[in-house]
Every structure is written in structure tokens, then in C-alpha cells.
Amino acid sequence: MLTVGAKQQTALLATNSRPLAVGLTALLLSIPPIDNVICVNEAAELLDGLAVAQPALIFLDTALAENGVCELSKSAHRLAPHAQVVILSENMAEFRDLLHEMRDTVVVKGTDPARLAGIIESLLEGQAVA
Image (spheres, rainbow, N blue to C red):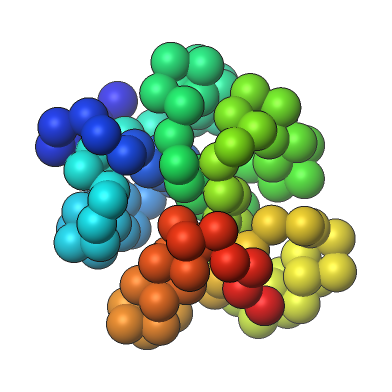
């Protein structure tokens, strides 16, 4: 588990991609009020982290969800009901499928950082993003 920054508003990032974790951590820490990012690389570690951290944002990489991202998302909502969940999809086909299945925000990995920052800011303000 990698923790960066002082604890105020926390984001929890679940991915087994080191480059994605590093890049998204940098982006998240540039967006107030996120002052803490916890990165985990296993689903079990995510669930343990949710109970302790109570994050404002949770990022779930579909590549990490062995039993399906829907089940992992349900567990995340149950353990951190106030958190906004963002699903990181592998490609456009998966993105389209998840948009119809999930109540969470879904973004494709590789989304323009400025656009992703806007989505994150909207989520932190409590606005729904399509």
C-alpha cells in the first residue's frame, strides 16, 4: 500500500498498473481538497483500505477486478457509502458495456487529464457526470 500526502480528503486507487497509479496519484493530488491518495493493487487490500480510510473518491481498475467490477463496486459502496466511485475501463467496448451496467462514473484509461480533472472536480462537488 502506497500513501502520499497528509490525510484530509482521501482518494483510494485500486490498480495493479504502476504507471497508472503514479500518473493518477499526481493528478489527484493537484485537485483540492484531495490531500491523500492510497494506492492498492489487490481487491482484498481495497476492501481493507475502505474500512479504514473512508475515502471521498474510489477508483477501480477493471483489470484488478477478478470477480467482476460490479461486485467490487457494490462492496465499495457498502463499505464507503458516501464515496464517489469511478470505474477505469480498458477500452471503448468495455466502457459502453459498463455505462449500461453501472451506476458509477466510467472513464476509459487514457482519457485526457484535463477532462478527467473536470470529472473528478464535478464528483467532489457532488454533481452527477454523464
